[in-house]
Length: 79
Image (cartoon, rainbow, N blue to C red; front, side):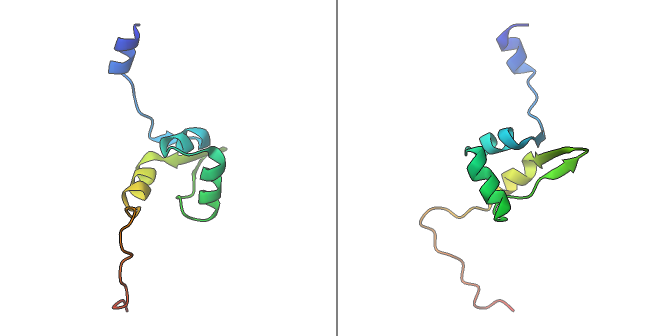
């Protein structure tokens, strides 16, 4: 199989192990671990003895990050 054929049929995994999850959000595994510990990045799911991150949850995490320079939301009207 040629590389062109492989790339046409490539499957993006839904569940990512630690190193791939960190690479998916473009950071080192050490930084990724710290952000997971701090509750910034979603915690892993458990698949038997494996810890895996759901790609959709990582996408949602990234989608909800504030833009640089954006004002923080005013929640003074919150109940």
